[in-house]
Length: 409
Ligand code: SOE
Image (cartoon, rainbow, N blue to C red; front, side, top):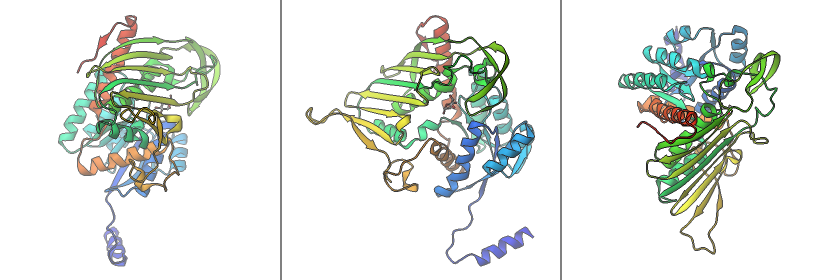
């Protein structure tokens, strides 16, 4: 009957119509903040971009059946699973998207790769270097059988950061001297904010460091086009005991219950780093920057110019061309909304701007291309592992009171 339907549909298709694209059937584990963001990406990518495969929101998975069902209805997933093992075992799933806290990334990713699935895994790739190494080995083996694995550093997919990368690679700022980067949030300022999973080492791996620091390490290395060779770090936990949470976390917020527990992660991480070329970098990741909500700021200074980006003004990139005569030189604002800017040919007319959620649409788009073309996606699990090594070096350096700590290549 199905074949008959297809023949009927084909015979009715208007002449010259494109044949249907094959599906990419996605199964997503997790349905909270990142689950909602990834759903948006999968739902929208094929409607905006001309993709070689059509993402299908096949199954969403969460332990709480009622909540998972509600998320499926809200975000448009066809079916619900309550055990990720059942999801991974399904032969009608091509790609497993992992949007859970870090403590389950390795187990799910290893099982999904072993079952022949493509994998997208939220950042940080894992909670430890050992887990990230095992995941990277599995991803390499899977790649040899045509499966790809990507880690979700979505800020590479802001058109302005992608443009900055292109400009650095074209030599527009010349030889790199400095990278200055900060990721500032303030949702922990209140000492009564409850002890949610992001504040527990056994679930999150680390605090601001893994959550925000992982993003800025990846972004700094991506824009610089080179890796960090070593770091010196300070970390601090300002509030060591917090009320326990009552009920579910919504986005980043939650309600307090009676009783308290220990915060077992860093609240803030500050570190300096040396790139392999000798360029110097500074990093700041904190959840205590009162008034700063999601301020990821990065500036690169090179011999011929500088670039600066601020996530709270994400359609803009600042550029100073140091080769201009002094009287006319200075930072100018590039409005990154032109069709020849990265990703923008498929969106709105110039000046109409994009937002946070579009980074997840672009991430889905790039991953679909990698799957269809059998290319190693960027950032790969190997890239995620390298970031994990930087995070481990930061922790080691901080434990030794900021001793310079090299990062294994
Ligand atoms: C929380 O600090 C958080 O949601 C991070 O986990 C995300 O990776 C970042 O994109 C926004 O902030």
